[in-house]
Length: 396
Ligand SMILES: *[C@@H]1O[C@H](CO)[C@@H](O)[C@H](O)[C@H]1NC(C)=O
Ligand SMILES: *[C@@H]1O[C@H](CO)[C@@H](O)[C@H](O)[C@H]1NC(C)=O
Ligand SMILES: *[C@@H]1O[C@H](CO)[C@@H](O)[C@H](O)[C@H]1NC(C)=O
Ligand SMILES: *[C@@H]1O[C@H](CO)[C@@H](O)[C@H](O)[C@H]1NC(C)=O
Ligand SMILES: *[C@@H]1O[C@H](CO)[C@@H](O)[C@H](O)[C@H]1NC(C)=O
Image (cartoon, rainbow, N blue to C red; front, side, top):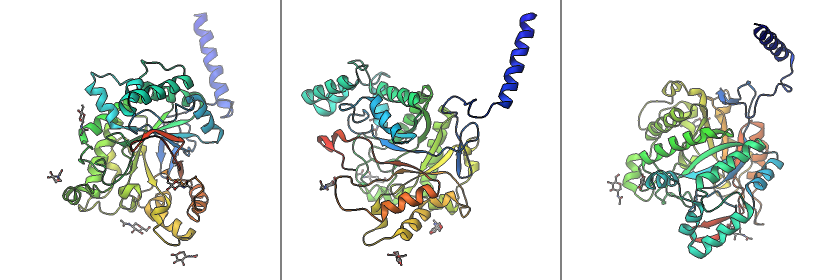
């Protein structure tokens, strides 16, 4: 009885403290999720606005191991991201990683084997030794997924959100319209494998406190390796079918994460979604009702490199108009359908070549003023292997 009274008083005191404490002293556990959307904003569980600002970290090339670990520890890479004031990484993975898991008796491949497979015996061993030297908690039993887990744990420690991105099906450098990974049903882009991969990563990511969002697919594009297939399948109508399928696969597996939808033309066009016009060749339009129970989880993502502005002179007006019509309009009252928008890729050559103004200075001005999120391409200085070249430098 005494115990009961004491507990009553204790809980009453806690309740009073909660009422009077400022939000800062009563800070909820980071990341204070699950996040939801409200119109054009992303909110945390306390209703505070969240704006993603961060950097891409690729893990979807041939080795399927997040890049750069032969040069730095995970802890030092995440610390550098944090020191820049960023709050997010866009961590990419290939569907093939999950396919191999299922082909391999539901066991992931070790990083040692993955490196040997991609780089050959000698280079694979040498790079493996460097990864272990920098990241001594790994060993010859560590799998690729355990590297993702270690990144997720470090991000949780340093309070960096993870946006997990399905970048490609067959692991490798992305994204040419000829690479067989362009569109649902393309040579390597098997639809069942894709939904299985989304569900798998959504389920796996439930153990990561840092995971706050996932994409459906990076840079959807016309599959030019087969024009017959392209003309019969590349459309907004098909886009909508598969976007509904993929997003419900993620939501069923993990009801907490935000789900990012990317547009056509290598994620440079979201206009019928934003304008609420027909998803051609059909006449249906984008409807929140088609995402019953999780319409408040959908975010739009857009990519913008300077080549989208076409050859010849451009100025800030043309840059803004182009970005607005491509998708940033969703952040405004002019949109039929409002959404938060994140520029999940943009970037510039950083090896001393010509200036990319006005593109980059306009972006630096416009994107923050529109309150869009952004993630620059990319943190790794090189790739274990890219398009056949080992330790290839990343000039972006
Ligand atoms: C789909 O996954 C299976 C393993 O379950 C794999 O054998 C097959 O090659 C994958 N399909 C494609 C097109 O990648
Ligand atoms: C090209 O696509 C068409 C239509 O989907 C299909 O019937 C055909 O087999 C494909 N050709 C090749 C070479 O894959
Ligand atoms: C959407 O609206 C913009 C103007 O904000 C316009 O430029 C664009 O063509 C429209 N797109 C579609 C598909 O209606
Ligand atoms: C910006 O560029 C466009 C197209 O090149 C041109 O029509 C327009 O006049 C330019 N605007 C300014 C303010 O220079
Ligand atoms: C910078 O990188 C680009 C693309 O990787 C390459 O074409 C160019 O030659 C490089 N420039 C210099 C100065 O190294």
